[in-house]
Every structure is written in structure tokens, then in C-alpha cells.
Image 1: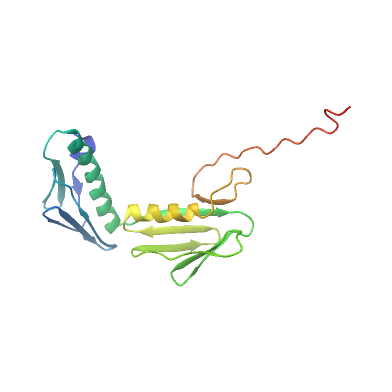
Image 2: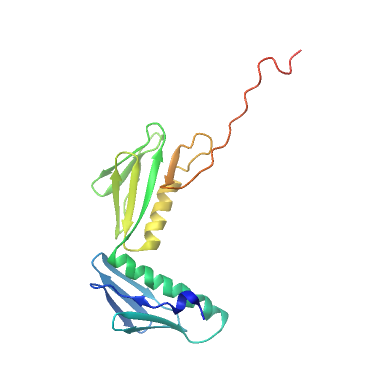
Length: 185
């Protein structure tokens, strides 16, 4: 049996977990999330404990067992605490700001780069070079942060661009300068 799938999900106070056939809905202070559970995977609620079980021992059920337990656990955490990804801008003149709920960044292009947040996602700007993407849906937060990061990838020679906070990028050495007079006769 899956080690991850066997774990019981404890519901914190203020989180409502609803199972209707194969549809699971989780409501909490940060929002509402729902997900369709595939056949062969069953979700049961007992008080404030949620259990995920599989119907058989076939490989596809074994693979989905731990996956859906993790997805449901992330839904519970998201509606209770929320998730966030931090991004850092580095480069001369690179800066971020908010206009309404939109994120506007100057990234060395001739035009500003603008991101409009989808429903459930919020942008925060700390200083001029730090952006925080937050929301209840872990997948959506990661996807939006990745899209923002792709708008200006970190180049490996001067390390200019957008990176995740705490991400380590190896700096490459540039071309070696020719030694003065070397190789000339």
C-alpha cells in the first residue's frame, strides 16, 4: 500500500470537506476548491479525518492513490493557509510595481511586461525587486510564478533576470581575455 496514500488528512477548524460521488469540494477561509476523483479511488470523511482508498492493486490504482491523497491534502492546506511563491528580479533597471491588481514589470525591454492575475491569485510587490504570487490553489500559484519567471529567464553570465527566491544559479565564466602579446610574433 502507498505510504503517502495511507496517511490520514486531518481537517483544521474552519475547513469544510464535502464528498459528492466522485466530486470533492473543500471550503475554507481562503476560498473554495473542487476536484474530480477518478474511478477506483474512493474518498471518505469521518468527523475531521479524511481517508483515501483504492479499489484494487493494479498499477494505475496504486499510482493514483498517493497522488490524489497529496492533491486533496494540498487543497485543505490551500483553503486554510494558502500558498505563495517568491520571485526576485535582478538587473539594472529591473523593477516591479502594481497597478490596481495587475503586476507591471520593467525588464529591459522597450515595453513594460504586464500580468493580469486569474481568479484566486494575488500579486504582492515587496520593494521594487521582489514579487510574491499567492493563492489557495498550489498548482495555479506555481504555474503563474513559472509564467512570470519565463518572461525574463536568468542569463548565466551576468545573472540578470527573474528567479525564485533561494534558487541557486551557477554563474558561467565569460570569454577569457587574451593575454597581452600572447601568440603574436
